Length: 230
Image 1 (cartoon, rainbow, N blue to C red):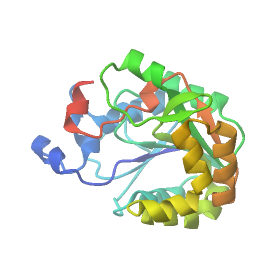
Image 2: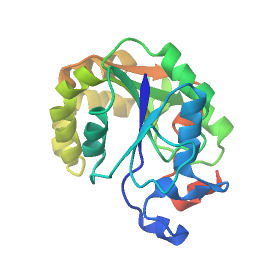
Image 3: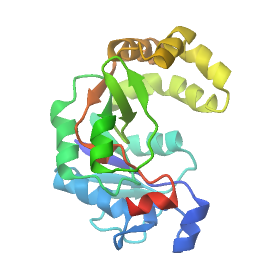
Image 4: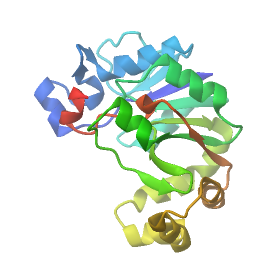
């Protein structure tokens, strides 16, 4: 198995560090992307990197140019890998090999596997860090920035994924796509993981599963400059 690291995109605040992409912003003396590549290597994975590469270490197996959007970058990288692949964003400076191995070893068989982290785990490890949480029957969780996917089956879901991204700034249309019944249950804290997975399968047309992970490092990315001090 290989990994894909998505390091494209531009952030205005990254310019204060002399770079365009936040993936290259230094964290504890190294570009954030290097911490991700190091964790993946420690878990036994080589990587295809998408984005500007000024000489990242450890070096990815292959570097591809930024195509401007997350899905376009992911689709381009998938042309160079086979089978099941782990996708990571490059703004996870806290990622560890142990967190990656947990994902690889515990993930169920599905076209898409998405890690979620209990709120109490995040707050214990990163007190004061601001995350977006969803309250489900099983607990309150934040989403991770890793994704385990089956390349062949992923392309079946790609048209719907593109539609969801296109609707992200139209909450009403996105709500219609997801289903108002699901959203109401989510707001009331009555939605279960099984219901989320079943609705994701209905929308995407492929099996999608969540994986509860005890490693908050997979969910604490750097969205803002102040996150660098976490």
